[in-house]
Image (cartoon, rainbow, N blue to C red; front, side):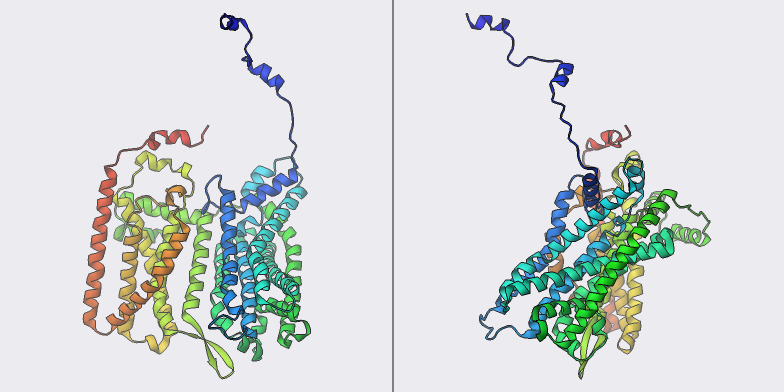
Length: 596
């Protein structure tokens, strides 16, 4: 009976209109500091790179980058534990110059890591077109925008420096067993921080100086090349660490004046002077003095040039630049030659020129390729250059085995770098044209991509081969050796493109990044395992081919047969993909363009 009258009782949670619910909501307004919001926005943009991150995962990407920076310091500290304690086969404490070499690693790594981070974020140190168009119309004073950018830059540099030197600062003083652990900790922190701030401040001052002296237009013209060159110099310093650490005593005590002008040695001097005090060698006092004055000069230049360059950059971005259009007859002749020799069909020409013009107009891809080229150049220098002792002096000489390995290294890195650029989309919402004509590329599209890559990789490899012949001198003067290297280089370019592009069944720059992401740890591990064997095999093949002209025939036949088999396999994959059922993305893509 009681349950029968429940229908007349008011409900416990009555249904209210939206107007009533709006009145019942407590009107609590959260006020956020505009400066904090701006600083967070600028800081997030340091990790919002279209080449490496997806929407909404900036936090994850930031953690991955910081862990990547911090891991080498941790691994080196852990590897040094057996060296500092008397375990078999160690029967004596670690030698003095070996300890100095350990200190040099952390100072050098801090300088290189901070310099690389600053170079990688080169384009975000100053306002760009997005900042001007979005933030300038807001009721925010220009002074507050500038202060927020300075705060975000300081936070980025400090966080990167913390990740670079944290594990070394904690672990090395504990395992080194110096007379004073606290003094060792302070010396380590100051020297590592000084090296990092010097390199970061140097690149900020360099960018500010170029913007103030030459203007924004010239700076944008040389920016990508300058980034690649800067990264190459930094990585050369990193890759030459084993050579320099083994000869550190001879470099610093032989009276070599060139060593006194090597920046990482300056901060090594600061490290040793702070750690040893008056017991430090005289050369370390000279290096420490140079390091202190250099740090003061660089930071002063950065503080002086950055505000002026910031103002000039803002003005030039607002005013814009006038594009000059002129007819280039040489380019027209080159295009006509390509159409008659290399790319014949309209579909092939469309993909070929789409790839070329995208790389010319996409700044992030130009920066990526420039920095990748710088890293490849640094690796070549590390492989081909070695230190040779002549009495009490050291001289840089070229290694014959390193010069022989230069060609296969360049062939591999060129193909891998270009494919990496192709896997990074420019703007997926602008790919509507490919959905209209058909989402799945056919054989003509893929052939055009491979020919585009082959033409560039062959040009780069041939240039390096010519440089090797010039540098090698008499050791590479034999015509048969040059022909063998040329054959192996061309065959490698063709086969590497066939292998790496075997399952690349898309038009360049149109693949979503989520589909092209791979496990970085697995990729790096495979590279480290296979790369030495690949180099040794190709070098031995070139030397074996040189012995007789009859050896050229089986090598050329191997390249030709393998190329035909891989091309046949790719055509089978294309036919299999054509039989797959269409997904619903093609019907939905107009709604995903964001036109509303």
